[in-house]
Length: 249
Length: 205
Image (cartoon, rainbow over all chains, first blue to last red):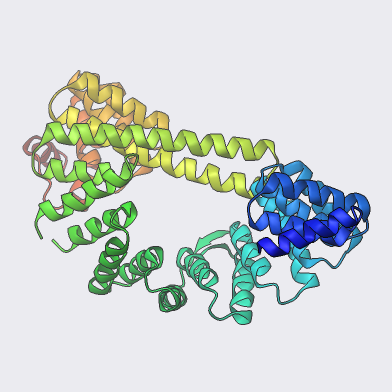
């Protein structure tokens, strides 16, 4: 790596206007978390070549990493302006807007990412997580399922789909808020999560809640205990295990 | 299953999250079962403080999102706040009930009113206020609180019985018998010598 860096620096020394060299060096410096130096090289890249969407995009990522959110947003937008099919730019600005609590805009951008790249697993997943309103239940479920369809081993998509189905809070056809948990579906996805990552404490905990709701208290107890074994400081698991033990008294 | 294992898990939950209101509440219920009133009160007060804090955090978050016009997310936090306030009102009521049971009417009243501040439709707090007023011979106020409580929780046999006693004191035998009969319908273990006598005087009811 040091060699690569040396050669890039040498290339820039020979030709200070060598945009690609500045860009590659900036990426290398980002990997090394040398954000200050990386920033200078991104700025130089953009100064030399202001038509390259990729440069704006990576610069925006760097700015996001150093918490310069507004400037980051501007650069993502420039990247999108230059390349309107830049799925990752839509995806990352979507995540940035989530952090900035501009959820509607975040949703629009994540949707755009999935429009442009119909296999953008992460965009589907984050869209699912963002759709928390009961009105959006079906849509959230659809997004998680699409993510899982593309990548069957996408642990977090299984986990959050499990949680969505377990809670089952949605609006029915006439807009009334209803609570219709789908324990069978939730169980399936929590089990899948555990198959992918056996030491995922939260999946064991949520599976235990589902089992308990289905009166499978012995199985539930096992999974609460497993969650506590993995994470002895899991407050909610201790609490629900206590409640379960109380009902068995 | 012994209480010690249950208590140990609740204590672990609290150790990991010192603001776990529901865990404090469950612990308080066990202390009450064990007649350990002092510990129950301490645990309930912890539950209340944690609950109030949680409501405040959710409210602030919800308000901030409302200002940013992020309505679905704001709604989620406001819903959480409502739930937390409702739970906290239950903790206040439980505490008020402990004070009522130990004839500390002043504290019982204070906490019952706090319970209603958190959730205005808390029938238990209204029942307690009815009892406190009855113990001070304030029959009109007492009847009002019991009636309000029944409007929210009609199937509470104890409240019907309490109201029956108050109506008897107010010399309203028909109302007294009416509520006494409902109380008996709801809970066949309920009986009162004075109300039984009164009922016999009005066989038509």
